[in-house]
Length: 182
Image 1: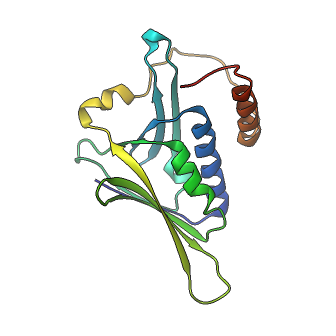
Image 2 (image 1 turned 45 degrees about the horizontal axis):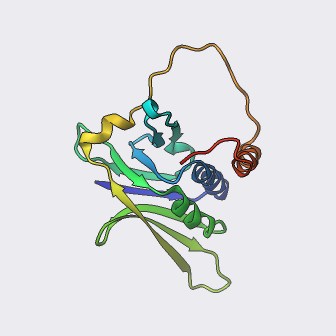
């Protein structure tokens, strides 16, 4: 399994960070299935006991300038990781002024998503800040639990305000205990 992505555009980095931050406000732990074309953030609650489910799909082309991914095998070209969105959000927030950010799947004593940022300097020597976000690899036998939920056909379009506004609303609702996600 290999994953390597690079974000060069500051606007894309800011947008990606806002998405991750919003997701981190909604859940403590999620599964991050990665395919050659998309990234997914999945919270799969047990519906029988009143659980909450969430499915967020991001096209990698909208964020990454370079993106290389090799899955478990050629027929199952996917990687599924269990990640704490708050840790990923903190790592991305600290590199907001970077010239470029690299995201890699690395294996030290356990798997990590490594976020390496090339920061601007006044001298010719470049500074690189690296964050290692611990992840767990989801076994292939559990992947079926994190597939896109089947939805009935619908004939509704919903236009939402910008993500930043939605984040503020969700934060206020969470603080007032309008809903609880645990």
